[in-house]
Image (tube, rainbow, N blue to C red; front, side, top):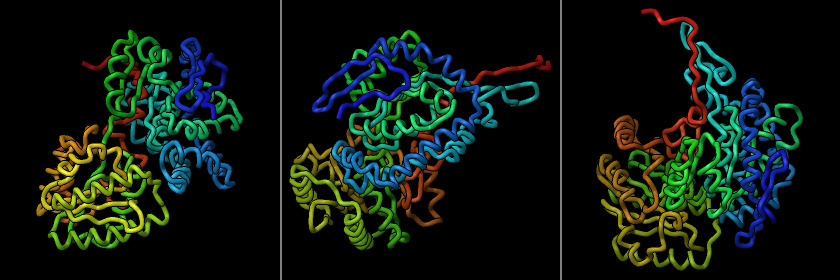
Length: 480
């Protein structure tokens, strides 16, 4: 299927072939034409009450829910399953989460937590003191370069950018392009002046890495914000290009991160085993919040009992969310299992297929040692795999997290984003303090560490504020 950009007006495009896919990129001239209208469109968006903007966004979510209910997304589900590598049931579950990302209530909560005053500060001067006012204006146009491991992450910054009044240009990955386009294409079916204006404010187009259009956007165009989601080498290259742009756009980078699980013996029961198993299977551990290593605080015997219980839960959940396993991955995982056992880990695995693996190690990680025989088994290759390290003290678990980015087996990530906890109440506060002191962004219950609250920042950053700037106004001189 040809990948076509989404926008209201017809802008000049360049047809390209990438692999087996036909891709239409907005050309340099098309981008220049589009961006020339940015100030006018953003001023019009800012004149519309925030509530009305959110109503349109919510209508997109409702239209998506209706298409999902009627079974009209089956073809898209199969295409995304092929492009992302996730099973159809996983894609179907993700489809069910789209309306939550577009919920007016959730976005409003996010905006209220983002700004110190009423969200009316996004539409007019709002009092912040005696004769003092602030108006948060769009910093855009905002150019978002999103990652390809899930449909939901691109929706979050794009929707916040639109809600805060920005002209928004989104470049999805090839893996999730069709899904993102399908969501925002529903704007076409919403009537009214506000929806019409939001269609004018949004453009979605793929750009290849060697694209002259991408070069123009990063180095010459008058964009206000470039928001990049991803890792090396693209991150350094994007940073280099943006730094040469004479308009000096703000560069916001959401780098590659991972998740961690901490469980103690006192909390190691059915619920924590189910919680860990669910997080291991969801998105095949490809989200920044996915736990890719764990620490068990307790004795070896207690850890073996817990790992056995997690294995049972993994088998049960695998029937609901079966994996897509290639022959090459099956070969590598079997080799890794043998290597881990040889190095001293106790390995738990699925019996019927190589769908999941748990490795239990004493006091330290064995994975780096085992990886020497299978260097291709890097973090982004590992799926439904976790090493659980048995430690005596909670401080040992914190040290494991602190040292994780330096290890070969976690090459390519900046650090740990999310830590899911299933621990005793009497140590939780001390543990949370230690994690916060080491730069962890999210500390959550193990049960739903994959879920985001509308009140959460993103990797320690407030996106709504990052996409706006404050205009300060004072009507009377300050008293001496």
